[in-house]
Length: 532
Ligand SMILES: Nc1ncnc2c1ncn2[C@@H]1O[C@H](COP(=O)(O)OP(=O)(O)O)[C@@H](O)[C@H]1O
Ligand SMILES: C=C(OP(=O)(O)O)C(=O)O
Ligand SMILES: [Mn+2]
Image (cartoon, rainbow, N blue to C red; front, side, top):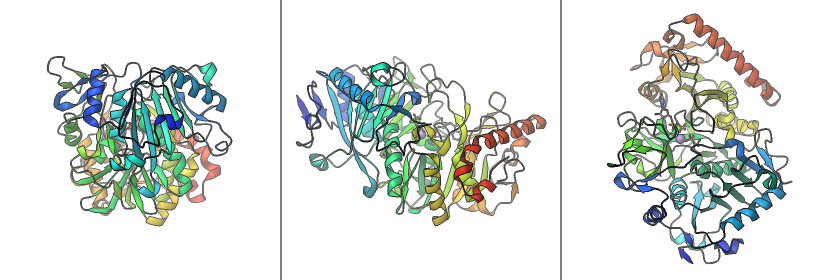
């Protein structure tokens, strides 16, 4: 049986996917919630939210993500960063997964990635779990209902958590698999229920497709000044550094929290929803995000709640520190209707420095910005990837290495051109530790980070007095109204100054060692901005 609204000439059978049980096309939120609850996938929560747990996988599995090594992508994929899968392995995976799917019910959403129609792609998502279908409906962009009647997919994602891959047969690493086949325009996901794999695989896809169109794809959030989309800001950052938290700013308009493109026309969100971390979510520090946790249809993933009252426990991380909520963009009260903005006037590079060495904010020259973008120094946040249990310092190029199918300099050069052309001001913001390293110091107060960002984005920070940092060479403001001046100088926040100097020089060396591999690809000005 087939139900729901779909292009009659583009059903799964037309794509060669036949023999399934019931197929539900483009169900809307209430119907998806009903289905998910009646199938026992999760429960209704307060305010009509959907509560779900995902079992063993509560974060991404980057090591199980593969790109199919076909001749057309052989020379463009950054193979040192992307595990290969043979075309034969993929074909077997496809056949085996389809055989496994026979007779079972599936949920299909026809959605769009990209708010700018000039660069948008149509994505069909086929989900075994009704709630995954609800999740991706929140996260991607929903076409008008009428447009569904003629919808054709550019890419199709099939996500079947109950399928277990076989490393021998499928040329993969474990029984969990995420396989991107750019030739066949297919993404197959198996063996994990973590919903984030759905959205991050679309991101990886756009990171592959857009550079050829002159568009810079970015792992960043974005917002703009109220009533002034031209005054846009973007916030690059690896998972857990504050993209979602800091872009939801009551004084600015939210464009999006995670994935954006920068074209000749400006910035655009790839998505139509957000995916926020709920651990220790505070109604005072993050009121907009907190409010979504009691709105109809919000997917609440891996949170502990009271069995009687269904009240959420934001402190209990016993399932995972990576507990999440997923909701459509317009659940944030000041979200943009178009999800478009101008060319960024300010570019923020968010780093979560677990060493507590970097200042809370520094101003970068374009060459320094390029250096830090390629370096991507930050920490992995506990729970976001399998096996990460405490903040783990890392150099994640482009502040999103796990999602970059092409070589870092492809993205670096695009960003550099755009900064040069549009003259953005660049900042490095440490949302990590202050007063000592992780274990001794404490996490940067959100309030302080926000105050610094407000000053950077309204232009007032440019008028401050700056000092040049002796270790890193960038400019650091000496005083900022509303922020404790001690905080601005990390060395001053450490009780043991010698320990700070030792840690700082260790970090300088880490930067220098990591950057050696980029030296052949970069211009002299970026070389001159190199640290150490
Ligand atoms: N100074 C800070 N700036 C931003 N986030 C902070 C800060 N201090 C603590 N946090 C917490 O860190 C997490 C940042 O996560 P999030 O905004 O979801 O990151 P991302 O979207 O980049 O993955 C949130 O749980 C937030 O409450
Ligand atoms: C969805 C994710 O992204 P982020 O943490 O950057 O929001 C993720 O890393 O799984
Ligand atoms: Mn986020």
